Image: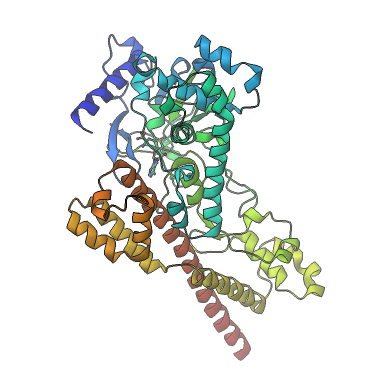
Length: 509
Ligand SMILES: C[S@@+](CC[C@H](N)C(=O)[O-])C[C@H]1O[C@@H](n2cnc3c(N)ncnc32)[C@H](O)[C@@H]1O
């Protein structure tokens, strides 16, 4: 952080302390006279370049289950708290706008509050919000095409068109409120809706959620990564009064329909609004050593979903999935939902995908009699298993061969993008762009279609930097996607070889 920014941030933490935000479980910072920061007892703001940038670090060893931060209800930014502004309230409650969703209303209210500038009560918080986001709705055509996979491109197109139509629907309310011209733009809308999508926390009384100063500084770790170190668990006295926890954006996609029925719906216990304390409370989800980043599980997301709602992805995401196209008739063999038939991030086919294909590979007249075995996850026979794995492997190979680039080219491009980001020398930059082939040309055209500036002139604009960040994310995403397919092919090959040798041994015996 630059010095001025650092000072501003310290003022924000002091402001937060004076409003009762505290990382001390026993007493509120309000009890200290003139507190200088709401942090310091359990947490501190730190920078984690490879895990979310600005985030919260432990200032001491913290035990799983400890209360690490409390944010009083009175500080939360909700539709209700923003509607204390009489003008805003009278317009928003006008029946003309009753068709707008709670999230659209919160988005308008946030833009209205931003328009107040320094006179906003939340100004110390608002001024430290990110200036831009990389959520799918902010992707241009170039960045969408860089995803390469039709389903992902379709998700990005859908995110953009949804954002556009929500913005258009809200325009008459924003016009009526006489928002400043720069707050009426689609760009401003994307900023405000991405602020909500990537930072809002679940509250029981409003499905749009709330913005939670300081509480929204926790970066994300996928649920399921924490150890089950029960010995060190601190008793959660208020756990039962917590609402369903940690749902930033309120769209937990944890599908317990998922792989093994009934497994994987572990209750998330790292944050929630506590009625008794009238505060948003955050608990350590595992033991942390001093200096470690303290993380929150916002929900269970694939990398595409993380990109859609939060604008980032994880290199190692235990919840990532690849869906491969199945023949329509396959869905009729078994009652698993389509979303449960996928390949896990480690390359293994899901339980439901294997069960379905095992039935499909069985002669039609025998399917009925073996379906109970398939449902229970059993292999039906060695030959059946081999044909299932061959089918999966063939289809993964087909998907990979239809992609515009192979993973090695993507990895090379990714390393070039990283160099481009770090390059401040125009000659070096030109060389890098020339070496990156067609996609780099498309990047230059998309960044500056009319003026035809040279690559080096382009680099220094903020807009271009954002395009590069999203391009990098798209390439990272497609690398992860291809890696899963490649791992699946290896898994199938290894298993087929092992089954074939078992078959040979059995025949010899
Ligand atoms: C609730 S905010 C967390 C605080 C945020 N880093 C900040 O500076 O305000 C969520 C955003 O942080 C970033 N983020 C969180 N966890 C991350 C992670 N594990 N890797 C990369 N970015 C992450 C993403 O930009 C996400 O949209």
